[in-house]
Image 1 (cartoon, helix red, strand yellow):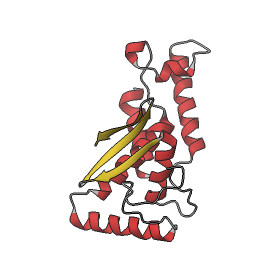
Image 2: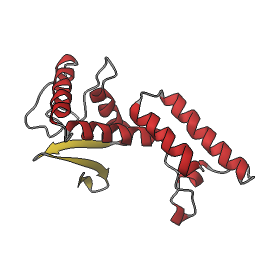
Image 3: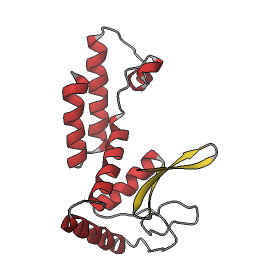
Length: 168
């Protein structure tokens, strides 16, 4: 029931709206509590709920991580929308938001041409809760970088060897 009813509805809300992190953490806690009561066991480690089922866990997504993933997914889908008008309006809004927030343009930066700071990080930005700012914060929370190159998006994840790139 959790996978079939609760998670899809929660994910829809996370994708289509703006949910405070504390509310998402509360949802995670409630889901774990419901499952803990159903299997009649107290004191189950949190990792059990999120561990892969092949490793003996329940393979539940952490809702805070899932929200960040859905934010990036929404950003990519709107940026590359098959509807020309949607794509043009969204890209125009992203450009305007970048300018308004003082995020400098850098043609050599793959990160939507946003200039990175001296540490190679995304500059901190304050202001309205736009999809661009939410996408930047999602990248920070997941410790990934979203790049656009040759009309395609790539995600770079940090590993022991450096950054690994995956086309999405």
